[in-house]
Image (cartoon, rainbow, N blue to C red; front, side, top):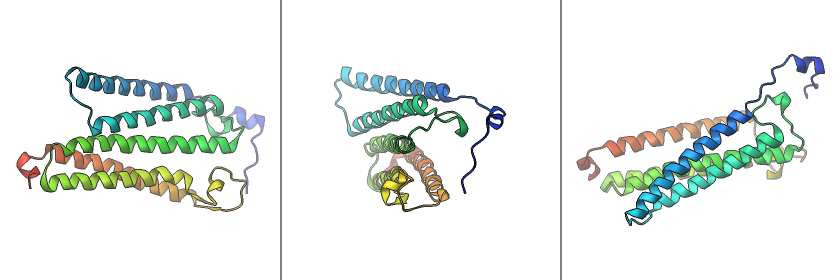
Amino acid sequence: MSTPPLTPEQLAQLPHDDRGPALLAVHWVLTGLAVIFLGLRLYCKRITNRRLLWDDWILMAALLTILVTDILTTILVIEFGLGRHSWDLKIYDLSKFIILISSRATFTLISIGWSKTAFAVALLRLTTGLTRSSVWFIIISLNITTIISALVPWIQCAPLAKTWDPAIPGTCWAPKVGTKIWIGMGGLFIFFPSLFAVISAAPSKMQQL
């Protein structure tokens, strides 16, 4: 049963603050800092005549996904009012809104997974034996987690097109299913860096086991 639209009097009593500008500021400032730090890293490698390694390329790919996320966020804020309360959103095209929101979630999750993968790949150069095998296991597990998380916004309905076009007949997961999957994946995203910290701090003799 759908909720009846709010009357002008009811709308007037609700808050109408807009966090969109703050959201954009945070996104672009943090991305700018990431560009600066990665640029300095690449510059130092260039002036010392060191070649780019796999972790450098993965970091650059992660930064590109972050830029895509920022662009999608900017479009959502400008066109649809992202950052406002649900009753103030300007959803003139529901399918487009869902596609943009889902794409933003996908690129955000990919950027998280790839940035952690870059650190793990760097650890491979510092580890040997069983510890190195453990890092490989973490890299594979991390990327499987990333792929599953990134696909969740797109696989919740049958047929798939119903995911972004609710008017199409079909069935979808209950909202809490996707939420529980993301919570579980989020826990893994926190767990893997903890393992990286333990491995990077392990004594060299232990790494040679």
